Image (cartoon, rainbow, N blue to C red; front, side):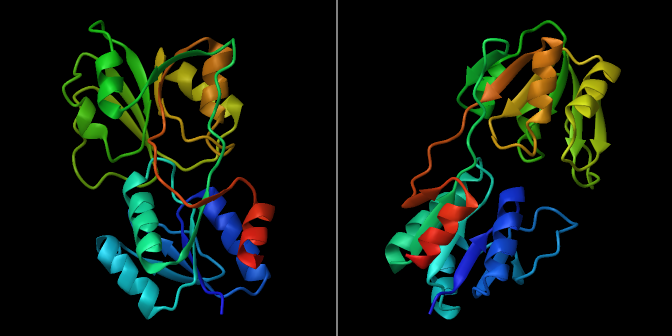
Length: 243
């Protein structure tokens, strides 16, 4: 019997959850639990970590999971690696849903770096006004860069002090239009964007806005994560489940 564990928390995961529910496929949707206001799903939902690889293997066994669909963020390499290892050890089918990465055009001014620390190193000494679009987890990496102004956009209101002297934090949730992103960048006089190459359409507007305004982007490339099968669209997910 098919029973699916969807590792979610992304726009793509929400779409696949609806697709699986519409097809009456038994499934559980898993949130990591870092965001407070979780989107309601048409499936059974669990929230929180699994306790590493062994905890995930135990969960697979206890819940009779036959298929895992990894729809986590492209930079959530820990859970993706754990999913790969657990699936391999437990002989569970694993599919990684991969949103296509953004690709620079001739009009883009990207500086490619391979890590958060490399993005910090790429900043010049001269003060900049930076839109730091990397999520909340790695903000501490930039705490020594006190000469810069940082604009942050967070999904939830911070519950503790942020590690910056000169910053503004906006609490808002997308998707945003290109026009909204242009207005944001102009209003705060941003001259540099630091972004992870998350890919997909949901958060691409800021990259298009940077292109239109001629702003440089320090683009953090995706980590390499092992997987078994990969899908790039919903139809491929259904074909994989029915295989």
